Image (cartoon, rainbow, N blue to C red; front, top):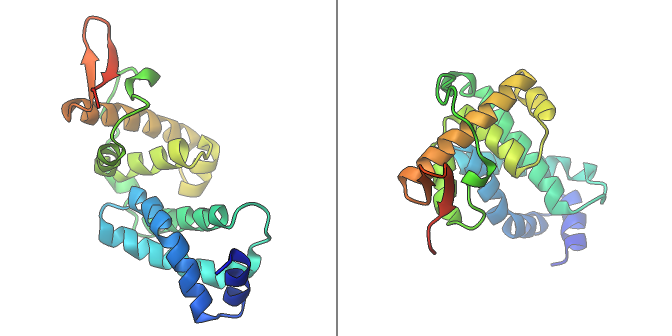
Length: 191
């Protein structure tokens, strides 16, 4: 089924069109939700809630940009709203971690095992994980993140910095990257 037919059917609440749209985009959107969720069950709940919003708001899609991008924005906002609704964001942030530790952009190699990195990201405290996903993966600015999460812009920046430090530490402990003490740089393991 073409995207145009799916959209037309979804506008008429056609179950077959909704199922086709869900089947086409749900695997990728589950990946989006999974990065924000603590476990698969929470990610699946976010996904279902997100698609309910997609189907109820499909009339607002203006064909400006890709449909997948429009759906992705709804999923990200659904994840953020779920986090805020459950008030887990502010309670899970370890603000003393990584005090005084410098960040090196070259510390995270560009070619590493994505699955292992995603698993490490999921182990970050919820606040760190959320800001890291929004800034580094979704491309939101710290100002936009602050507005979405009802936090200060400086809080978004510091949580992103701390998330990177904690992630680097996890990747070093799992031997995905190595720190060289004498040169104070990191490098990827041989793949």
